[in-house]
Length: 163
Image (cartoon, rainbow, N blue to C red; front, side, top):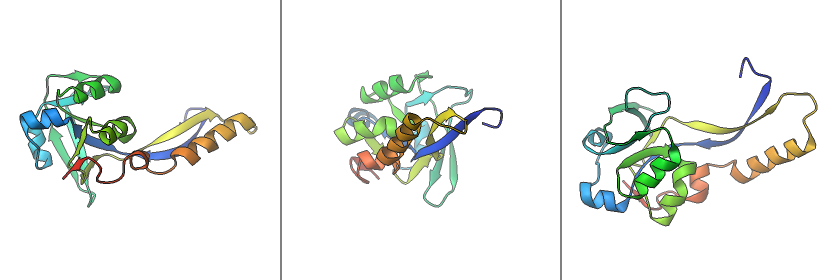
């Protein structure tokens, strides 16, 4: 935002989770480690990327780079979510997109000791000295509602997760 007049206020942290449907796992088996993802159909989000490679971080902070392959590469997260729920492959998506599907059992979280690079959800608003009370109240409400771990607020740790 260096070249912007907008103000960014952090709402909540977010993580990306590896997930697949129970049907896909019944057909193809469970990956036992990140390297095994190379042998699976991966559903790849392609926005701005040319080489399908996932960067996973373990609980010790080490990064693992995995070249993934799959028949489906698109730039729409909702489409990837629907494809994953329909047994099409393994997906790496933000917890705030997949948490409801994991909680409902439509997706299973895989390798929960590994996540995508940490990121966050922000509210952006005009940077003036006099932010309206409505904007301030709305942003405060968002922080109050979602200020904890987004995915864990909706899906208790270990719920529908396979280690």
